[in-house]
Length: 508
Figure (tube, rainbow, N blue to C red):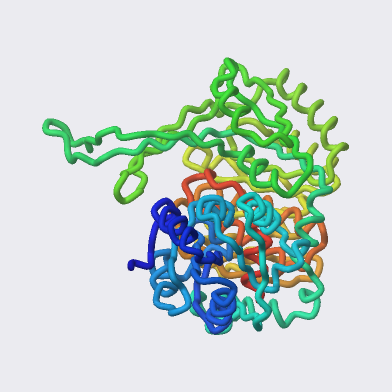
């Protein structure tokens, strides 16, 4: 009999086996690296009944970090099916065992002893699974076998890590100061923070096409429209990424005079995000359309709907009043300035001078290069800038990065500057102690880099505000950015529980 089945077909088989008096046991997990701990667990589980079924977490729900799973689900299922103790293997369709429990109706749902205390499961999934097994009149049991960690085995052998990543993680594990940090406690401490995000709202629209070739009469690439999707970007993506971490987030931004896209924006926001919009006269809501080849996922062309003239004096007065009113109510202010006319130099100084803690990202793009500068945010607590943006700011193509970052820190008098360098990772300079820190990038699969800097800014600003170790804070933000670049634009929103599990996985 074929061991690998889908849940629907196996459900019928198991009901027949139950009628013959067979007792069904279900185990569930990722099983990325099959080890002796898994084998002993399955052997003990099998002794509880007659038929052992193992359900497997799909790749997209494996929350062990951006480079996991090591093996895709089809190979993980094949490994499990080769074990004598395992009778059937099924792919799950979600991140918990609730669906297979409700559909397969096992007599016993079996977990390892590390799940016997449900309070230690930060996801709360074990409680959902216990409720599900009770619903089908089964029971939960726990094996007592010695525990082994797939993540620890993977990390110790550097299977999915570069030498740079492995050395960095080892340095974190050996750092006495970092050992004091509990990732769950640190991230849970973000909950109490009231965060104000200031900057432009951008709608990223992706238009997928099939490249047909050169036009017959003109030197133009012809494409066939296939589909499109819209994603909220800009400052709203920062707010969305923080929504799982913070209790209250306020956004000060602008939309077009006719309120285009407002319903779409509000519909897609989490309940703890409070948007305050200024209507910009003679302007539209910013929409950045990107035409994408559907096969290679490469961007072919960008078409922007934008009016990036500075806001009027009247609008500036309204925004100034809102800034002063909101800043005093918030612990952390995050500014992501895309240089599209929303924040002038007067408002930048106002934000810096009145904020308790302010983190800034002033981005260069096709429409503002040569006109936009980070220099208007002097004295910020934290500045994040791309290496190319820094070199443009300093008018220096060739100098060593550490020299330039120190020079920039002196120029803008920022307490902490972080420079991102794509797949080369990030570099932070603490001006107070005159020390440079480096962190590798952790993304192995890059789908789209848009929004990665904003994601780093969001997470790094909270960690540094909480006075977490700089290297540890850089690691958190690098993981967040690695998660971000695995999907287009800002379509994947950070999840607090997944972040904690990723951190714990890497530091085992």
